[in-house]
Length: 100
Image 1 (tube, rainbow, N blue to C red):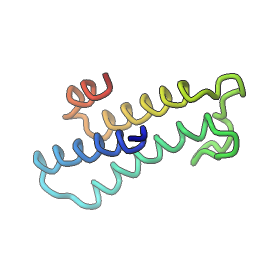
Image 2: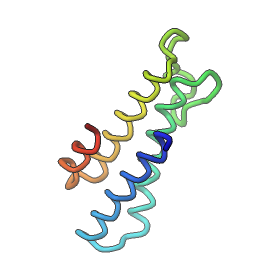
Image 3: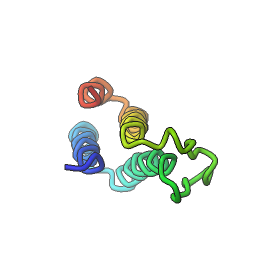
Image 4: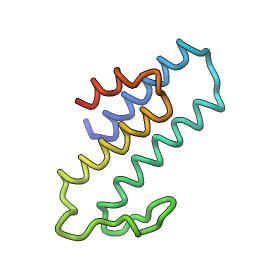
């Protein structure tokens, strides 16, 4: 399973917990998942040779020696974790468990 699919499962579970707590709010869910997906993409783009970030373009691109799969995975994990904690504050403890 790829890292993206792993975090997608986590984001979907956090969304389900939010729906259980607050009811279905489609526009809010779309916004929260967009924040999460953009954070993941921008973290990935910083370690890719050609990808351009959504807001800062290539300004966050890491130097060539830092563009390793391990660093990319770490960046993606932190970006997705922090974005989920930001949009689903009530699930912080659960998200922290998933991060570990």
